[in-house]
Length: 286
Ligand code: FVH
Image (cartoon, rainbow, N blue to C red; front, side, top):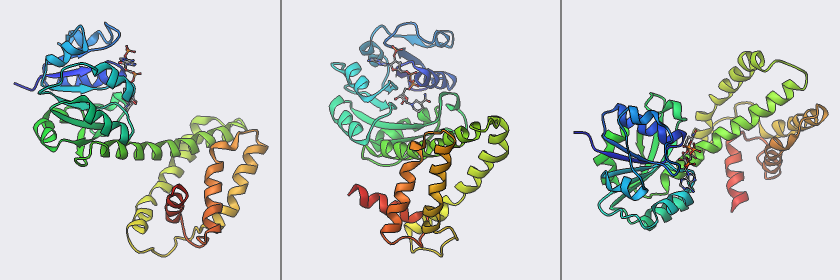
């Protein structure tokens, strides 16, 4: 008998999670604010509860995937979570995760950060960060494996959110640059498809292979520069901004990186490479 699971929230992600639990043979009870959402789950064997409280009462393991942290708190306000393990997969800040863990009063609490889009759930590339109760993680590891590769990152409930947000900042940074590149290409009517497949994707892929070297520089003594010093990059960066403006493309996504390069050079890192920017960001925040 597999652990019965309740899924609160049948948005795109909650629906994918419920489907994965059903496919793995778990009895699944679902609840959603708007009734009747994702009717395909009924045919797969999900039971529908009329309220969040009734859904929680149905299973020892309660997986929550709602829009934002405030939604989780309002949905579970007044619901008896005694004896339950709550796994909250709603996107949140580390601070929100810590506060929600303390507020809910569940027997066990795990916070999670899903590194997948709904179509990836149950597939080999998906993984989910978990933090909070190590005992709950070990007890429910098998069930959680039905969703994605589980990565437990520590007892502090805020840690999973930190890992999640760090990866999302990396993703949005890459997409910001790619979005700008496509706008520039489009300013000369270049077709997005061939430009992306022949040039943009291979270029980004090649450049991202330098990340482990950057990480090595951050974790240990600085290695020899790879030949792309920051003074050179800062000087050339003005051309990115000037070209964008000349082509009628808003440069605002690109300007912050130019500003950071200038700061790094002014702080004496002109002959260093990209790893030095991490230190400059830390100094700027402090
Ligand atoms: N979808 C994705 O690509 C990402 C992947 C990584 C993780 N995120 C996070 O997952 C959370 C849920 O995302 P989602 O994709 O399921 O989002 P929606 O399809 O928009 O569904 C939202 C659900 O939240 C319910 N909801 C909204 N407001 C309330 C409320 N005030 N009270 C109760 N429930 C509420 C909504 O219900 P309804 O509108 O159908 O009644 C949906 O069930 C999210 O944190 C992502 O950042 C997804």
